[in-house]
Length: 307
Image (tube, rainbow, N blue to C red; front, side):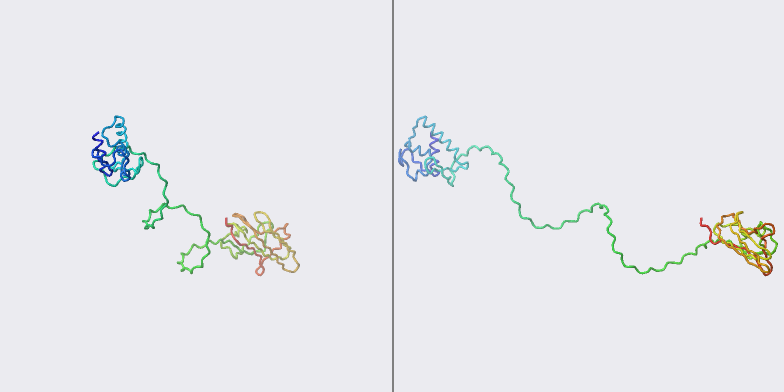
């Protein structure tokens, strides 16, 4: 009981007007003044209504202690007292601290609140400085071929190159002959032997047989020119035992005639060409030659086969 009274007096010393219990300062048992009512707690008001009597019943004392405990729990933790504007109304705590105040038991920490909403985007900052160049990446794939550009102007002529080495001379294929008849006597149906040689450098013409032997395959030109006297004449040009050209001339009395013929033939190596009288006995054998009249036979290669 003494401790409770000391507590109430400390409350009064902190700013609440608590009258002494014996000298009867204030109105004992009566209502407090308006100035006193604005500073008194509900416990102090109850005490004044009781007439500030120290003797209380057990029930009243228990109620008073309960109210005191509730008052202690309702007071701030920093020891500041709460004043009442009227019965049951709390005022803002005074700024000064109570002397000898005992702090209450700390409460349990509260639960974390829900996260707040995202704030608004801030204003863009200033542009930073240029960074160092990065590492060189791998080489990319080859792109598609572009469109051909416009042809540029013609360049200046270059300097002439050095003269090349002389090349090998192309091989020249030669085959030719030109022969004439020396004797007037000829045998029918056999090759005529032209023994008068005008040209036979390659020796492709055989004077002993009267035949030309092909040594270079290709195209050849053959020609003959004969003098006809005293009889008709019929001669044939043979290739490989086959007559390919005929010439016939009818003799005119007391006159000298001329007969000729020419042809192009393709020959293979080994082919033979000759001229012979085509007659039955002594008929059609008017072939003639003397010192002023000639009968000739000739031939030469035009071009050889490339294969």
